[in-house]
Image (cartoon, rainbow, N blue to C red; front, top):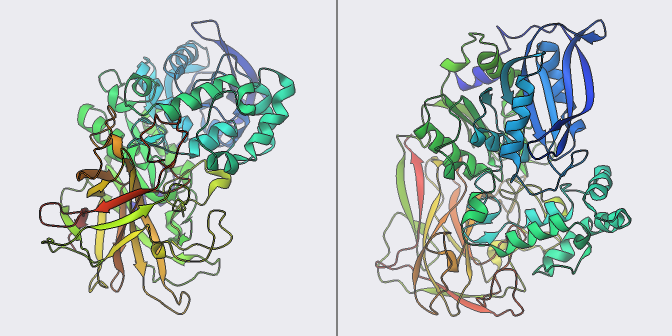
Length: 620
């Protein structure tokens, strides 16, 4: 069976639609410490009353308000499932104090225990949820409850001391936006409810809503200190944000947050899991390169992986940023998930467990014309695979050269290249692996060219034209090149101070055509490393000025065919704002600097210190 046919397969041998929906609203379930969590229970019904009998359960625990999960109930309850949707602790109608994911292992366990004891439950419980709702699933698996039978974590927030919040020492400012808007990445009607719930004094709730409209101002004015903004009226949020922004070392603060899968493998429940993410998802590295690989290695139950061309939560779309893909890139999500739940919660032998363990969308091949919607036609196709990363990968170093070329040729005695990094003029973020970005910028595959409409851009120049961006690119390719897998840069560099950042970005350079006379510089992936965390995220160590170090920068994974006539490009710089906070180059404690300094940063490209990107090339 091909990946395309599996994704489009109608739910044969699936649950028949025979029920209506009965809602028990705002049922309170008491946790072990006495806190009560508000829960909506959607049950199969007939003739206006709950249907007799016991049913399997699909549960979602969310910080975004129970009503946002109504479509989950509308789809699955008529097919013979009970759907449970719960506000996590400290959010909306649930009691308690909000600390992200910290309490969710115990709260999830207690909720599952309660569900299993209800007369309408047959004891088979599965989970659903995206992003934070994916994190609550991982937290639940870490608590190892007896009745949990399967999970489908989508774009799951996890391992966030490594990637997703802290990122090789840098802080992802989408989390500043998330907290400043109290979990509403754009200020919506629900912002008022979230603010009222978070505020110690209800009179301060409008000030919290107003702060959420001024995120750009605050990220431009970092660091962020206690008691200086309206967020002091939501002290749980302020305390956590300041600690997360100040805490760079990968220690128990991050490992014990509740969804650190790779640190809890020994206790993580051994059940079938379908891991879902996108090439432009903000959690793609954790999902594909950490969770799937480690659970596949350590567990006996089936672990499945699907990666599409999506941005965060974009499984139902066939576009991401400026890029347009083929129509089948959009997943028929509920029909597809139903087969998985039917197999593991109802025991229906529908063949889903016999399908390929990995499904990938291979981007590229679309021709590069402009669609009627104004997007770049990138194209692509689905492909089944037997493992991740792919066993047939040819890991191929492409070396940076002082003349700006990128090639397989090992450099010899080439001179280093230095540039000036002014933290008060950072390189703007133009797309990439971001989410919860709100007004801070764009997501996904975007052209790396400024326009005056972008708030951080002062002109319309390509980012490549900036003096603090070093560009290394191949000649036009004489044949297509498929890059599928992990993207790792080995960067030899130094700085003249105690600390700085280095960024890396992989770009697909499209040649000019009638729709795009200047071509397109399409971002594929990017990443960063903070100098003091060059030895890994365990413990900081400041840099020795002007001493060359080899830095490892792992981008998020990808799968893309660079077409004939395109160029592979590697961009090196020292900022990518507001995707990441800007390093002041002073070596002061994180989120507590009072000074800024301009850094002179140097990249080395010689035989002893070869800067290169190791590309996972898939043989044609």
